[in-house]
Length: 384
Ligand SMILES: [Zn+2]
Image (cartoon, rainbow, N blue to C red; front, side, top):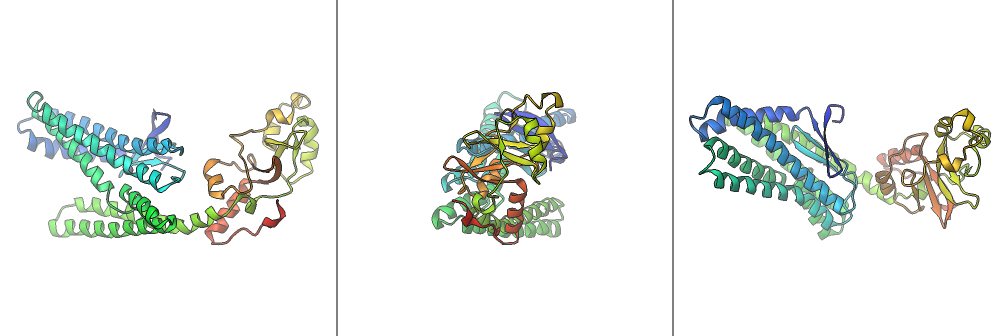
């Protein structure tokens, strides 16, 4: 979805973008308003005026979608989770929240924030439409009222109880609270999503066959999206469970070649050339790990400066380089750093000393094994 996405800017530090398919939605909404809703609600309004108001309303509706997603993202950030990007697309919006909510309560509030925003915005438009009706032209108040109902429908649809809809996340949070078992809660909510998808598909087919309206196709498209997302949710559950049981000590290498921070680049090059590694943990004179240095970082130092540059000065330090304890869950490591092969390393530190390192390859292997339902066979007992 990223390649066909164009940036719209930043709000509260969150990147906002739109997928080209949003233009289809805008076109359909503007067409619906200009040719059906406005001519029916405001009789005699000129065609050009209808189209202008319709186009503006479609834009405003897009902005209210954004408000919905923004509320999800801001509540997530309130709970200390990362909120990186919001993308508007064919079936609405998606706030990218790469980290999992820590508690049922936070999961519930993050999920409920979007529909709550839509209800408030919708109520606002309905109120504005009612207040403005004596003063503004009918075409404007009809558009305001339509925006009110559209946001209401958006909220209600999103509250349907099945993932990936907000209602599904709410169901998941409640089930998590009641059962105390997050994986089971996720299954329940995903099953809800599958039931919903079937119901919507049947409804769409009925619309097409019995009523002869093609809007049923839209329902079928949405149901297909729901079914795919619900299935992905189900198949990811065992993987997540396995990952959450894995710790850094399960995947780390325990005898890394360290780079002395006080060495110059020139002094270390010879040593680096005799290993099979591309990244090295950098330690101080007393053995305290401070960061990681890669061959590519060494190569960026001009030849004339290699004898004057110390490793400690060019190594990648936290937060860009993750230093974590051996018991840190892998799921946490994977969601808190973005590792580039050959350039980054997770330093595993116990009691102030380096006990191991995990390279992107180690984490990728653990992920792939987890996908096969297997635990990595590193000797976990070798590290204290
Ligand atoms: Zn939502």
